[in-house]
Length: 167
Image (tube, rainbow, N blue to C red; front, side, top):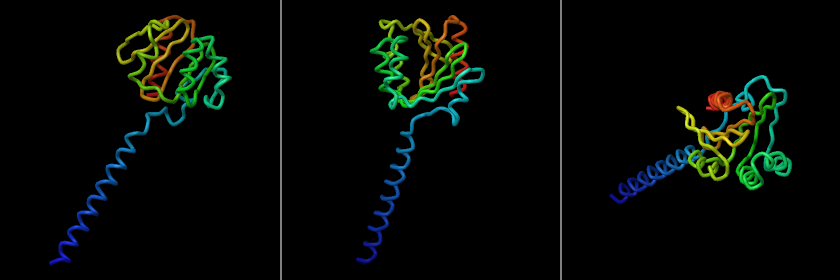
């Protein structure tokens, strides 16, 4: 009788171990951030004169000197601290996709009206505009944007196209 209860205890222990391993495996899979397409440069589209891939944390000074005149030093520092890799396509307009720590729900806080940003809510896409910069966070961990002087309607279409290629 004692051997029988020992077998039951071992069976329960094994079942508990399998359950724990399954939960651990599934929870670790759920924590993976959404990313860009397998080939991030493809998301930027065709027709650019130059394509760049910049590991931001390894090139903070370079990125800061380019970004600060556009968005201000404080905003540039925040963006740089959250960005891992930036993908750029430069031509008539400059398009970019950045990966890093960009919570989708934090866009309203990051791009505040008091800092010169205007929120535009289009069907299926909320985006933000500040002078010649337009940005959107289509998924957690991904920031899309463009630098352009083409105007609101042109930027709306270009950003929507970029976001659709990323999503």
